[in-house]
Length: 200
Image 1 (cartoon, rainbow, N blue to C red):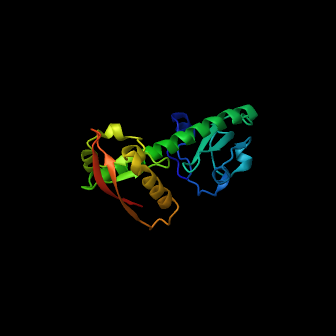
Image 2: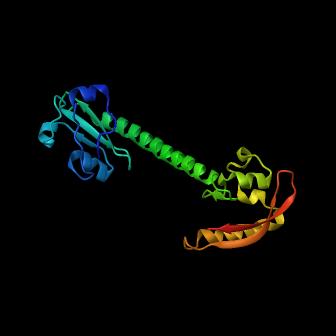
Image 3: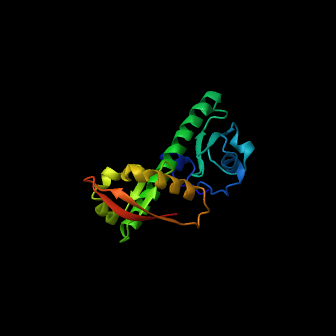
């Protein structure tokens, strides 16, 4: 758990913050338990030198690490402080998770855009999360129009049952299984066009 971000005041009082293993010390306790750790007397609780910092709270941020807040007053943090900061840390962890997902999605989109293939990805709700440019052109639709559109909305009504069945099958199959089926899609102008899906 290396220090990655800290305030100017923290850097002033603790210019060389230590690095911990994820199961080491009070910070490791907070990370492993995913529960806040409040220390009223740092010098008694750890042999790490924190300069004038006398008390601290360490709040887990999920897999992102631990948020540490210190005070130069012993026993500075009460139950209300801990509850408020815990709520803030939960909010921060959720925001970091969301940023990670958005970054992964952007990176994946860049990779997919390099493919000269008609490829799409569905989210858990069966909606389009990614669509490559060749597929948007084939469908005659704008990429923004396709975002979060259910795949079955692009299928003629008389074909939707078979596509739904195929999606249910592939969701419950081993990851290595591929399922191929022929059906039709609806273009932007309402015309039907034949396709062959390979689901995995």
